[in-house]
Length: 98
Image (cartoon, rainbow, N blue to C red; front, top):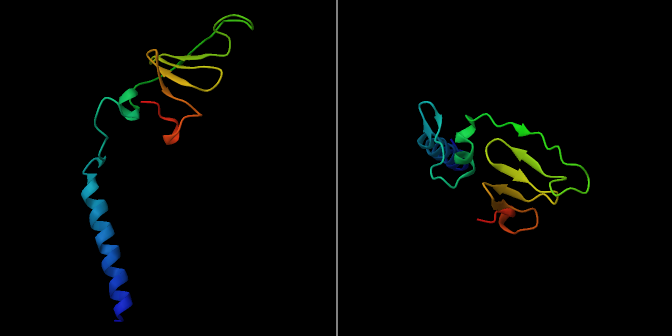
């Protein structure tokens, strides 16, 4: 076997070992902490529905989207969670504001 083949195989084995250490028997590890995006919707287990916005053009709530988990999106695309802005399309760091 050539040296470069051995190096490639060793790198592949190291990568597989690293991936195997991240995986639990039931799947990938869920992120921890109450501030993660996964925690906001119970890691995908919480059914979220959109609340019908009945405001008309010119009224205060026109253009907003509301959701049952406490999320709201304003007409400019800013995301709010329980009244606090958590994402903005114009902010740095992928839009995160917290």
